[in-house]
Image (tube, rainbow, N blue to C red; front, side):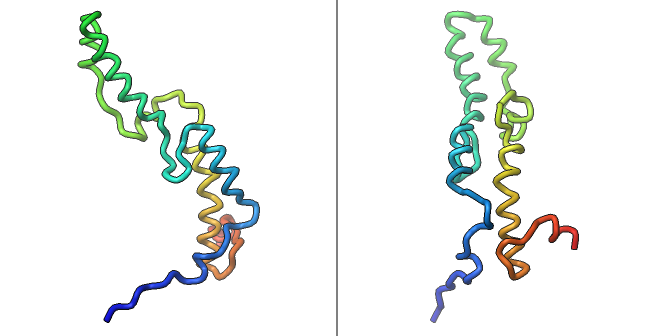
Length: 121
């Protein structure tokens, strides 16, 4: 006989005060970042560039050289090299800090724990 694990009560608690999930989701959407995955569609532009070069080759043969020089970049490499206005590190900080604070609160028995205070201990 197997028992189904039930989530413990601390994980059902609300996020810390001051964390507005709806406002954060709207901010991410405005930056073309999926609020649920944290991934940006801007990365697809990297691959669209290769497709565009390939499509241009029949009319401009010199584009073949550019296409052959194109190499795929990892997600992180793309954003390091890009001019993407809302680079993910800046976006992620505002999203991750409250989540770490919430996790710290659960670990330490409170719900609104301060990350700086936890890390200083």
